[in-house]
Length: 179
Ligand code: ATP
Ligand code: MG
Image 1 (tube, rainbow, N blue to C red):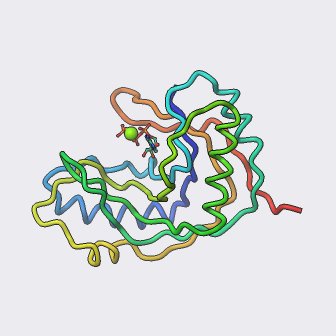
Image 2: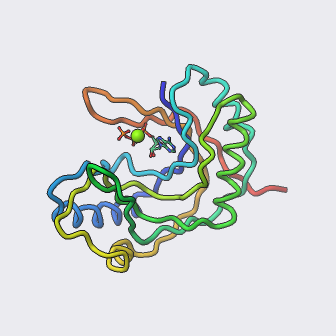
């Protein structure tokens, strides 16, 4: 199975992201837009594995307090065949610490993760082709700043069911105030 660890989003945040990505869709000649249910912030990508119990063990070892996640702005990663558009998330100390802890816990369980620096983003669309792509400043204004309290992280399974990309939560770790 294909696994990753994510922060799932509140409905109000999903609504705002859908508004922003809807506007983009209207301008685009082509794009694969993230379904509302699938919007998330990836903390670690595990990839193909059969070791679900080890992944759960890593999740269970994470100790972190709830924190406030700041989302806002839109950006683009240039790609051949069409760009990836994302909404930004602030790389705050609690988010950076949580991501590092999740990655360390997974590595301790024997998973090899890529060691690219963590760039928190919420993918809105892939393979986007726009005849007149907005400049960086215009893009940044398309998602208003928003905050949500992060109280859990989730181990997700990613699969195609009848051709449809489907993410299923398999395990949660609650974030709790640390003594
Ligand atoms: P698809 O690959 O079908 O376009 P997807 O990328 O959303 O869809 P997955 O490839 O299963 O689905 O990825 C699950 C999550 O992990 C996504 O947030 C994706 O961006 C992220 N991810 C996938 N591969 C990597 C990677 N090599 N490094 C970091 N994050 C990754
Ligand atoms: Mg992918």
